[in-house]
Length: 246
Image 1 (cartoon, rainbow, N blue to C red):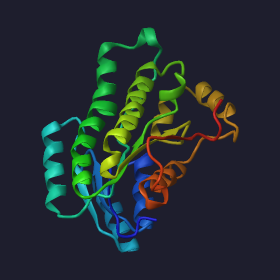
Image 2 (cartoon, rainbow, N blue to C red):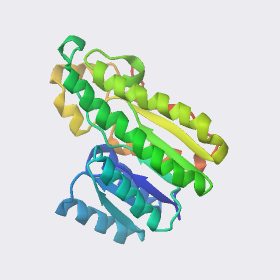
Image 3 (tube, rainbow, N blue to C red):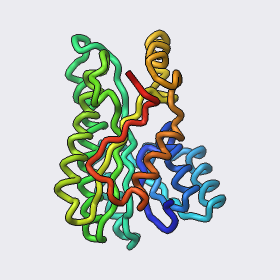
């Protein structure tokens, strides 16, 4: 689905991002793979995927809230003289607490990582896309950004901001051939799930039509579809990948 494409994926060291990196390589993409820190495990994964699927993978080690580092990374990408065909905004953090128990510090941290960093990076990359004739921006949001789940006021608000950003991008950059869509995962088997109380997780699983949590690979497959030309007439949309949440 992505043979010959060059894409950027953020937060590839675990969870959905790691699954997206694997799926993109399997589908023939050359990838700029972002992670917060350089680790032997991540370098080994990148090398193995590149060798197995005959693609090129260039690591980007970056704290997403480091604005100067972000600019340097984009400069490096631009210097590669390759078109950026797709961007998958996956890097993010979660926070679970009731509204009255959420501090200003919690609020600012969530928005710095989940929204401001995504906004600024997308702003820079979309310029490269527009100059190159277009591209696809896929942002991993959350069902919490739509449903307003109890205990997720801060996290949900940051993801709702990403959804609104994507819809605006779709309208503003559509004439330049840039598409923008969001994926809203429901309960998914990632490290983030382990931060939630067991009784809450069990209750959420029971509220899903399929009676289970999603696998990161299932979210990643949806992201690969939206990044590819198979979704060439889809933009400004929010795709729920949630197993039928109620």
